Image 1 (spheres, helix red, strand yellow):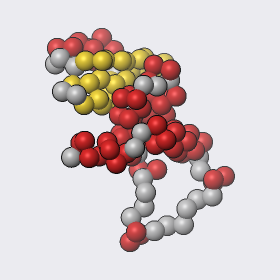
Image 2 (tube, one colour):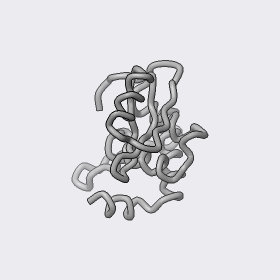
Image 3 (cartoon, helix red, strand yellow):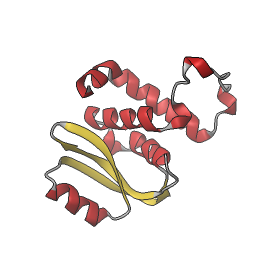
Image 4 (tube, helix red, strand yellow):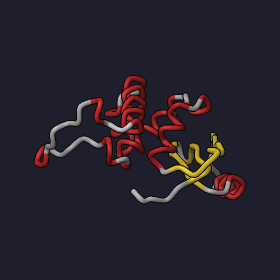
Length: 130
């Protein structure tokens, strides 16, 4: 994942698939999504510049993104793109950090992912995508 930061984020749906969207210009991003016929567009200004991992943490906890589609999209993005919480491959298994050694961001992301996994069955999401 890059070191880019974003001040606007949210989710939108196109052709039945909901995804997380990142931007730095609220109006410009909204115009683009509307022009490209996205539906269920929900974007917020974050009040600062944040990495994608931090944005996902914010979105997971935000009241506007508590719906099943939004939580699923955010959880899917985190599982696929946030390396700090990806499961290690069996070949290169490293000792897990004790809970006290994780950064606060890692703990918050892990808690959000665990909550999202309880709400949805990720196997069903993966089957629908592939």
